[in-house]
Every structure is written in structure tokens, then in C-alpha cells.
Image 1 (cartoon, rainbow, N blue to C red):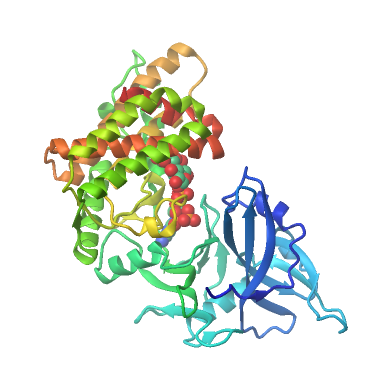
Image 2 (image 1 turned 180 degrees about the horizontal axis):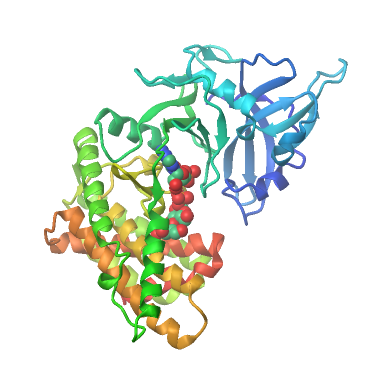
Length: 480
Ligand SMILES: Nc1ncnc2c1ncn2[C@@H]1O[C@H](COP(=O)(O)OP(=O)(O)O)[C@@H](O)[C@H]1O
Ligand SMILES: O=P(O)(O)O[C@H]1O[C@H](CO)[C@@H](O[C@H]2O[C@H](CO)[C@@H](O)[C@H](O)[C@H]2O)[C@H](O)[C@H]1O
């Protein structure tokens, strides 16, 4: 296998502390060390005091796992006061015996001069590389896509696992932080949906790869920035809050989700229809396959395997294990169900409502899964299950974080939250199925995927937001 780049002069010392506090570092809470840093490319710059490079940090965990993380860097010969918040470290980059050449390394996403070099990369067709043969940084721009070279960059400030930068108000560059060799599903799927003129995605503008004779390392995706977008998660929370507020003002303190002014059900219905349309396009382009008996056995084994690992990480799951195992095992009688490419990690936070309807973003799949698995066909009911779980989350997270500790009040709000979730789940399903009843096979698959997602969420919450662990646990409790 081609080694990744050449040794970088960036010192490993202190990088572990830097990673541990970075929003995008996925190894928080695990013991790790930074074993080395390599450089995979340098972009041309017209500024003599600035070098714009891409380094890769090699992380080694005590349990034997290794991971690669991308560090896009702006290296200045003098400290940059306005970039204090993006400072990473300094180093001498001159070879031994030569006069010292100190460099101050900053996270490039915060530096307009460095990001302008990235933007210029998309406007050039050259392979930029210090390497040999076909090895090098390759910017791809989709045919017919024009970028303004005047567009200034600003880092995206929302919650995310990677790092995004806006160029003007038209383009959004997402720099992948955790790197894995091979085709990135976010690029692959968005490419297909863009070619298909799907109304439900942001258009793909381009991407950046480090191309080699072997599998590429995909570094970033450039896409249309959806200017008028509102986050589906925030909209759903607003609807839940509205219901609670209206209920509190009403004479009896009671109200059902369908009576509230901020009812979300029509939006949930349209969101279901949008997902169905995306699924149809993916099935047409990538095709569908029927799950064989071996395929079903593998699915059950994966669900059971995830459960077994989850019980170790979250002992509270143990009481649900027998029921869940029985539920998963029930799928054994269902070979022949169709599979296809799907979103893979769908939740309300991956949906945006624009003036032109709902859009789905982030087709990378579940971050914890190995990349080849994320590109495998799966049942479309996995995505539907993800959304059903998300409606449950929206409702119960408001009760958990915003309702007063007055128990009588909380009990009433819990009932309303459950009603809100059920109403919107049903509306979403109706939109997805065009109001067709699910077959018993589809219902069984959906139930298993809902449970599997809740198990995944329990681990996710235990690691990232322990105070929210109760949300997936309560949902598993309700599954019986
Ligand atoms: N094309 C876009 N236009 C506007 N906002 C977007 C777009 N794509 C994503 N976002 C916003 O950025 C957030 C993070 O994007 P996402 O692709 O999920 O990043 P990550 O993979 O790093 O989590 C999304 O939740 C959404 O609010
Ligand atoms: O980083 P990603 O967006 O790819 O997804 C991960 O983080 C999500 C949280 O931001 C997590 O989603 C869970 O919490 C959501 C509310 O914050 C909720 O709507 C989802 O239903 C719930 O699964 C997601 O699971 C995780 O992969």
C-alpha cells in the first residue's frame, strides 16, 4: 500500500492535547497517542510569508486501532494575531544544518488567505503534488460549475463532525476530518443525485482527492450552499416547544399535538415524500438486490453484534437484550427483501427546509462504521427508522432539557411529547409510503431497524452526551 505522504516537520508533541479538544476528533474518551504526522500536499500561494499545506495526523489507540485525521494548515513565518484562536503549534522547518525557519501553524479553515488558495485549486485542473507518478492533490470541479474567485471564506459554525467553510453565499466546502481510503459515499451519492437533478439535495460542485495508483483518499466535498435553509431538527424542536407553550396557556393545561398552532405534521409528511423520492433515484441508479438467506443471517449477526458490544459499553442495555435478540431473530424468516444504496445515518439534523422544499444532507453514512460497510446496499427501512427515532428524540429532548422539574407538569408534558412524536412519525410514514399500509415484512424490518438505531444511540449518548442517555433507553423500554 502506498504510504501516506512524506514526513511533516509539524511536531507530534502537543498534538494529542489539541485533538482531544477538537470538536471533530472522534476518539474522545479513548486512550491514544499521535504516532506521526505526514504531509500530502502543498497548494500554490502568492504570499511569500504563507505556506498552505495539508497534513495527516496518524492516531494510534491503545486497543490497537489506528485512525487518520486531516489537518489543513496555514503556515506563517510570523505569528498572526487575528488567528490566535486557530493556533496549533510552531516548528522549525529548515533541514538540519541550515538557518532556522520558524513556522506558526494555524488551522487553515479560519484563514481567508489560505482558503482562497483552496478555492483557486478548484479552478485549476493541475494535479498538485510533491509526490511521484499519479500521486497528488486533485481538485475536481463539476462541468458547468462556475465559482467566483472573489468569494471570501467564512467557517461554518453549526454542530458537525467535520469542518465546513462557506465561500460567499453560494458554495460550501466540507473538509473531511477522519480520513479513510476509498470512495467517500457523501461524494459518490451526491454526484448521482445531482446528475439526476434531484430536488432534495444541495448540488455537488466538486471534490478534492489525494489520488494514488491505489484507492484515493478523499479530502473534501464542495457543494451548493442552501441559503434559505432551516435545520429540520430546530424546526421540530420549535413545534414541540410551541405545543407545550400553548398547552400551558390553555385553560386545562392540556392539548394534543394536532391542535397546536405550530403543528409539524404537514412538514413531516413532505419530508417522508422527499425521502421516498431520494430512495427511488438511488435505486434507479445503483440498482437493487434481494437479500439472500445468507444476507439476512449477516444482518442479524450485525445487529446482535452491535447489541453485544453496546451492552458492554452501556450496562443499562442488558435488560433489553433478550427482547431485542428475539426481535432481530424474527428477521430470519424474511429473505428476499430488497436492498439498495441509502443515506445510512438519517435524522432530523440531516434535513434542511428551504423555500424549495426539504433537502437531505450528509450521505456519509454512520460515522462509526467502516467505509466499505457504509457503501453496501441496505434496506431503505433503515433510513425510515432513523427518522422515526429522530421524532422521538425531538419530543423527549425538550421535556428532558426544558421542562421544569415540577413532576405533575413533567408527566403532562411527557404525554404530549409522546403524542407529538407519534403524530409526526405517522405523518412521515404516510408521506413516505403515499399512505400505503406497511406489509408485515416491512413492519418487522422497520421495528428491527428502529431498535438497532436506539441501541446505537445509547452508545453514542453514553460517549458524547451522557445526560441524554435516557432518551434511547426509554424508547427501548417502550418497545417492550
Ligand atoms: N448544502 C448545505 N447548505 C446549507 N447548510 C448545510 C448544507 N449542508 C449541510 N449544512 C448544515 O451543516 C450541518 C453539518 O453538515 P453535515 O454535512 O451533516 O456535516 P458533518 O458530516 O460534518 O456532520 C448540517 O446539519 C446543516 O445544518
Ligand atoms: O454526526 P452525525 O450528524 O453524522 O450523527 C451523529 O450525531 C447525531 C447527534 O448530533 C446523532 O443523532 C442523535 O441525536 C439527534 C439529536 O441531536 C437525533 O435527532 C437523532 O435521532 C439521534 O440518533 C446520530 O445518531 C450520530 O450518528
